[in-house]
Image 1 (cartoon, rainbow, N blue to C red):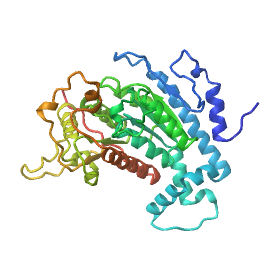
Image 2 (image 1 turned 45 degrees about the horizontal axis):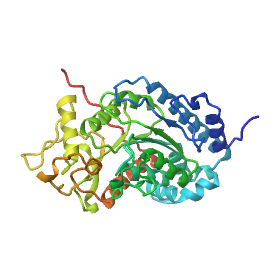
Image 3 (image 1 turned 90 degrees about the vertical axis):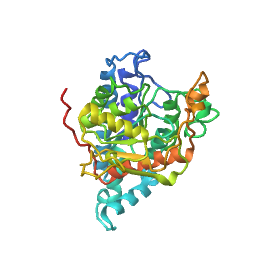
Image 4 (image 1 turned 120 degrees about the horizontal axis):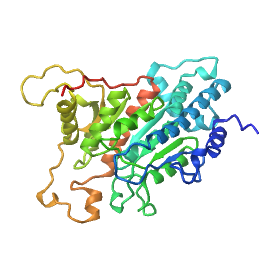
Amino acid sequence: MRPSTSTYSMIIYFLANSSLLLVNSSFVRNRHKHHATFSPPATESTDTSYIPEIRHCIDAIKWCQSTQRHTSARDETLDNDTQMRFAGVGRLYSIKSSGTTFEVENASELPHVQVLNRLSSATVAVIGIGGVGSWVAEALCRSGVGNIILMDLDDICISNTNRQLHALTSTVGKMKTDEMKKRLVDINPRCNVTLIHDFISVDTANNFIASLLPEVSVVVDAIDGMYEKTALILACVNHGVPIVTCGGAAGRSDPTKIVTGDLTEVQEDRLLFKCRKELRQAHGFPKVPVPKKGPKPKVKKWRIPAVYSTEVQQLVRDSDSDEGTSSFRRCDGALGTSCFVTGTYGFVAASKVVEMISTNNMVKPKKQRTKKQ
């Protein structure tokens, strides 16, 4: 029997009948059958043989996107549920884009409907679902983004309570991506949430980003490992995928100091400084001006939006430099953190993503010449 032509029903029909959802495969069925979950091999090897399976997951997203576009064109407008939930976002960015409001005869040509169509058909990958990434994911979902990929392999620790959105008494010990998905589906049942239970590594970053093409619209980098972060940025540059990277939130207490700018403009962020240095020295990216050191040469922007704080980061005390054996220390790190700082980082990053998608002005990173060995 032919399924309902609504996007929601067709997604259920496709995923419920797909052979990808066999229990023994990398995709698993859960209570939300219209959402895909991917779990790579539970090893720490650098084997990337599971990448083709991610490809199948992205194919499902592509199918959903084409269905959404077809349904919108046929019905000439978004469904009432989406309109009621996210029309405010559409109006905000339609006015921001045009600077005025105007009347049209066809409902599908209304500026706010066009914005909502862009958001609902977009795919955003959030890499790292912790203190910053959890807030990013929720803000994207509450803004009407229709396809969200969550990637992390960490579980929720009780000491995450002070800064991570999904950390509750009832969720301690559970997977961050799983709990985040529950929130997103509850916010917007039509949001297609894909889970990837894995960490980005230097060896897999490039193949992983390649596997998301061409469906992925933007990548949000919310990880805190310098080499992994650098590899993810480099992979997005190589494949021309827009990326918003987030600096270190620990050791800061003033959310009003958080700003956005090109990666070449970042100040007071040791994590992004190290990434930038690695990109220059190992991958041939051009030099950037050094603050307070001589004349400032003109440097072309790398077209990599970064979220960072101009607040001077606290220094690690000698007594805190050794993590010891405490699991709380491993979850927390040596520097203190707060939700109003990590949350602001996440909201600022999400706002950059939503602005790019809604105004149809995607900031693709500038590809650099590869450094000669």
